[in-house]
Length: 326
Image 1 (cartoon, rainbow, N blue to C red):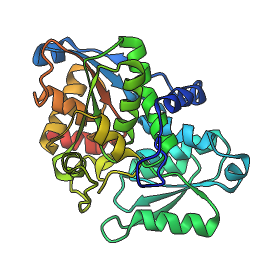
Image 2: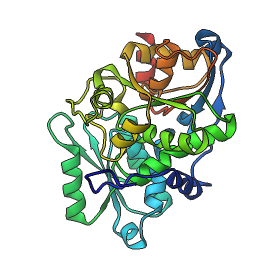
Image 3: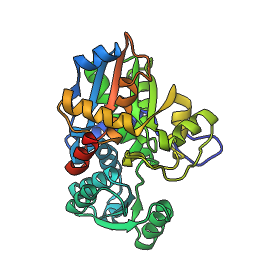
């Protein structure tokens, strides 16, 4: 599908199905968890897609592996470049190692130390930058051009979007059609991919995206009908510290999503605590976005079958303990 008036080629439902074939055997088929406590609290039947248990600790591995595996042999030989605050960085580093592709990752100076260490541990070169004074997209394009690398951004890429959509395909395969699917929203790759998967497997499902209050560029964009850019948001949801949606993700979100909501950092911490105490899992703040909206009653799910994406679990234990203790 070509977006009117641009050269952007949008991914389609068939691309998500093709991505599922590419990543089979490489990505984990993550479990779908349930909680009687969550159901009683909300009045709905909730199905949590636990991507915190995905390889590299987040759903990002799906899109990264799909994008790298789709490259030509020549492009693989030259190598890839990505920019990311952490989860796409780790995913690209691991996917590249598995596919024997050199990887360079541009990461902010204040990225979580465990995410930087994991990215290097997977064999990638890490280039640091200041997210508050430097433009990561411009920096990434410059390095990629200088070194002849293929740039694979964290969300604004057809193969990345299609790969992320495979998590929803798996969810629908396990649960059957759903009334509502709530996804986390940063740059929009996960939400856009889930929308494509829903069109293929559960066309009556309403899609809702959730982002941090401090970083509501997606909500502003959705409600205004055009991409809105904001300063780097100050939020504990480091995976959603994006400043704008992408040329590939925005049209899908604009046309296929029911609404975009926001949650506070305090609600994210409360949701982290719920997951730890009630469901015995570790979830990072960004991974709690969708669940926080549902558990805090921002979405009326009474009598509904609802999918909730847990997007990642990459948080160092000291930070995890500090947030829950506070």
